[in-house]
Amino acid sequence: MVTKIAVFASGSGSNFEAIAEAITRGELDAQIELVVTDKPGAFVVTRAQKFNIPVLEIAPKMFATKADYEAAVVEALREKDVKWVVLAGYMRLVSDTLLAAYHNRIVNIHPSLLPSFPGKDAIGQAMEHGVKVTGVTVHYVDAGMDTGKIIAQGAIGVVEGDRESTEQQIHELEHKLYTQTLKQLFEV
Ligand code: GAR
Image 1 (cartoon, rainbow, N blue to C red):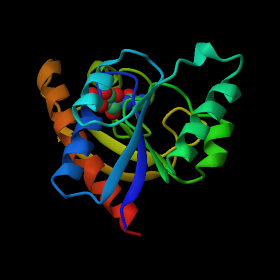
Image 2: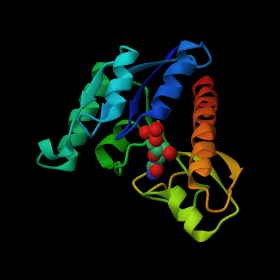
Image 3: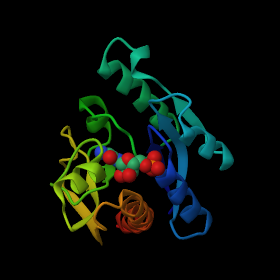
Image 4: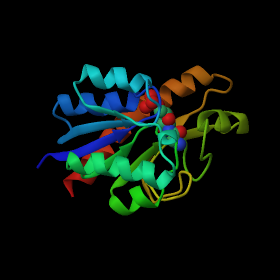
């Protein structure tokens, strides 16, 4: 049965697009019911329009509290009967309201081999440290910063000083690993 999902993104949305393309190719039995962005006008909105997927552009500052913001998001997800929340470059901590509504049904992708280099600019952090191997992690989401239970990881070799090629390898791996992992999760 097709799994109804929402993809959350704050920026470019290349992971969103990779998932949408995998669905179009018939590789992932899911339907993206809604894209949610906390950054109105982010490039992910343009990408979603290309696939005719509705977008909720919702800035937390429109609400008095984070709980109110998340309650509005949960209401929109329920209206669309969304079963899984897929974070794809959503640069905000998730808290109680959303976690309670989607217990063990929120996943995230992060561009490092967690628990190393959580938070922002994980690729930069890894290169700064001089690691020779880095990678990508898909994990369940809890209230911490990139701390939930790990579901899948993939590794790449780092070309010292070459951020561009490292970033490119990371993104290529993300696009493959996220789709494969979602497929496994939704088949259970
Ligand atoms: C991706 O590299 C994703 O792993 C990262 O943001 C990027 C979004 O790219 N997420 C995090 O760092 C979460 N802590 P995209 O907008 O092109 O999909």
